[in-house]
Amino acid sequence: MTLLVIAREILGLKDYITLKHLENMNKIILATGMMVGYAYSMEFFIAWYSGNEYERTVFINRAFGEYWWAYWSMLSCNVLSPQIYWFKKARRNIPLMFVISIFVNIGMWFERFTIISTSLHHDFLPSSWSYYTPTMVEVGIFVGTIGLFLTLFLLFSKYLPVIAISEIKGIMPGSQPVHHHDEEHHH
Amino acid sequence: MSDSKNIAVLGNFKDPNKIMHAANKVRESGYTDFDIYTPYPIHGLDKAMGVKRTILPYISFGGAMFGLGNAVFLMWWTGAVDYKLNIGGKPFFSVQFGIPIMFELTVLLTALATFVALWALCGLPKWYSDLQDDAGFNSAVDDTFVLSIFATDQRFSLETTTKFMNEIGADDVRLIEA
Image 1 (cartoon, rainbow over the protein chains, first blue to last red):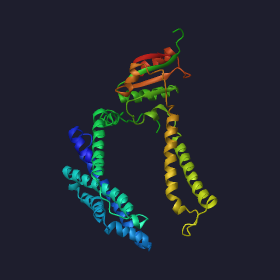
Image 2: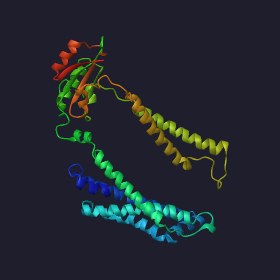
Image 3: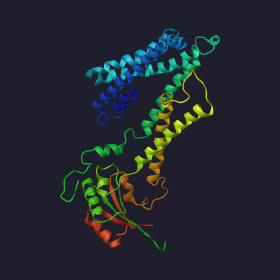
Image 4: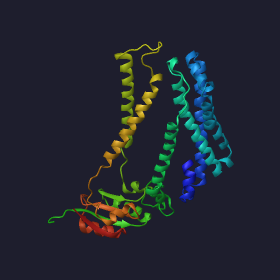
């Protein structure tokens, strides 16, 4: 979505990828956001319902421990921010959908961060528990991956067709035969 | 080159209605060994050509069942027969905990079987085609519909087939030789 909104402006694809398509994509973002919210609540419910003190502790540490800010960022970006797409005007608003797509990107990043950092900082050996902070090297690697992604996308949009032309040919007016009933044909 | 073998008679079309009409005519005339090359899919063309339904779904289903069977066997054999591990009193094999692996292997083998079978059924990879040097044939990926009646067809004869192609409205009717 982040890439698409910009690409469609710059590459002139508004007639091929219409506002209707973007609206449908936003509906999918809303649906998947709620599916992910269901998954988060099931995580909580099963951890509580199991009665297993270790499973409960792991969950409480994830939500209220030292990395609580990552967990709640993940939840608000992934579940709460797409809720605006219940409103049709929001679904059809291009700057808004760009902003929300960035929020969802941030939310997914926090989900990966929560999974990795939270489970590693409190693993099976309590003597190795500690609070991890990234060094400039790790931040640099992260920025590098964003750069790599953008580079590859720009190379793709420069050298390869962004839209499959054969598919466009198939839906142009006059491309399909006009269906008519002939006496010779038995259907 | 001394003896050139006839491979096919090719004809170009520009209008989808004409190629549809031509496909019907070719099928009704009794030709079976022919093919039509188009830049994009044309709805109803394979029915007009009399193309038989593909067996690919059955192969995919076979792949799915193979994957499912392997998943169940793997978990049952390792968990309930060969190396029984008592984990919290849970059963050695049950459908409930088996679902993720069963799902994964079913999907994986369906996809792999479909991919391999699709390539095989299409005759791919096709290293060489007798038609590949023809300029009209190469424009079939661009802006032309190309009808090709192969010389291996029982009803093929150079004169009648060429005349027939001209009758159904093909442009640039030409013979391709090996």
